[in-house]
Amino acid sequence: VRKDGFMGPSLDGSPQTSEIKGDNLHIGYERKFENNIDFTFTIDKLTSKSFFADDILMYHNRTPVNSFDVYSKGIVYTAKVKHKIETEDNKLIVGIKYRYKKFVFDKLQMDGVELSRYGHDRQTVSTFFAEDDYSLRDNSIITTGVSYGYIANNANVSDQSTTLLRIGH
Picture (tube, rainbow, N blue to C red):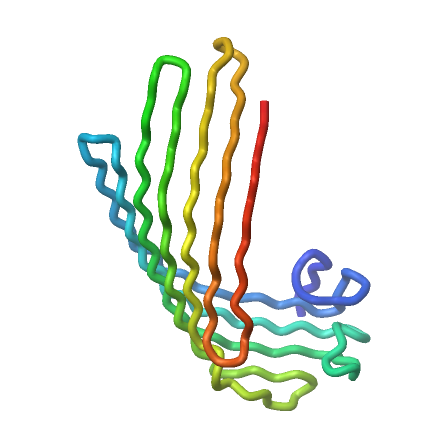
């Protein structure tokens, strides 16, 4: 039994048991075009086995849960296109990214009781982003960025959108 207080769910942040095992196969292709356009396509095949146990890990429907056991497999396809525009003092990057994730739960248990493994098994994420770096001097750069993402789920899991704004110096 391995313990790691930084991994896994726990009400007090320190599960008594936290075991995570996984395999990931990553294949990627990248192409840079002459007009400052980059294209990336990746495939990730994932296998994950997790077991967590504690006095109380979490609550599910107001009932305390002491253990959570999951075995899942999935595949993720990601495509990204970005365009870079550069001048002497400025670098602007705009792009889009699309991710499709398909997964299957071979085992999904809370406190040894099997949970429904059917329904939510797909997710897509569509993202639009822009980043601008402006150089005031050689050692002084102002960075701004914006990202909007839409996460679409199937079954009874709610879709959601995300917006990220960033500024730095």
